[in-house]
Length: 161
View 1 (cartoon, helix red, strand yellow):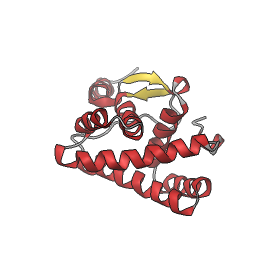
View 2 (tube, helix red, strand yellow; view 1 turned 90 degrees about the vertical axis):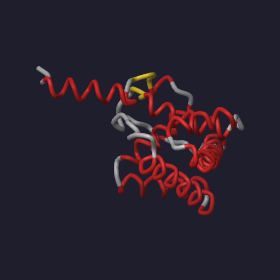
View 3 (spheres, rainbow, N blue to C red; view 1 turned 135 degrees about the vertical axis):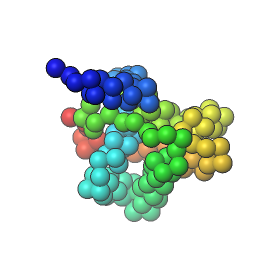
View 4 (cartoon, rainbow, N blue to C red; view 1 turned 180 degrees about the vertical axis):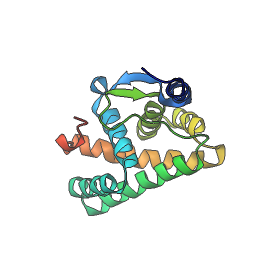
C-alpha cells in the first residue's frame, strides 16, 4: 500500500513536469535519442563519460567532443538556471515525461530551423536572457544527432532496454 507521503510526492512530480505524455517505443529516432541522452546524462559521471566516448567514436573527435560539450552546457544551464527543476523518468522507463518531451522538442525545433518555436520552448524552461544561448546549443546538438542517424551510427548502446 502506498503511503500518503508517497502519493503527495507523486502528485507533486506529475504537476512539475513528470506527467507521462508519450511512450519511448512510439517516438521517432531523433526524439528517442535526445531523451535517452538526457536520461543517461542525469544518471551520473560514468554514463556521461560513456556518452562522450560514444559521440567521439561515432562522430569523430572534433564533432563528438563539440557535441558532448554543447550537451553538457545545455544540461548545466537548464539544471542550474532553469525556471524549475526538470523532471525526468528513469533510464529504462518507457514513459516520456512532459519535461523530457519539452527538452527534445527544443532540440528538434532548433535543429529543423523553427527558430520561433525553439525560442518559445526555451522560454518554458529558461529565463528570457538565456533563450538565445539555449537555442544555439540546442541547434548544434540536434544537427549532430541528425548526423548520427543519417550515418547509421545509432546503435544498440542507445537502447533503453
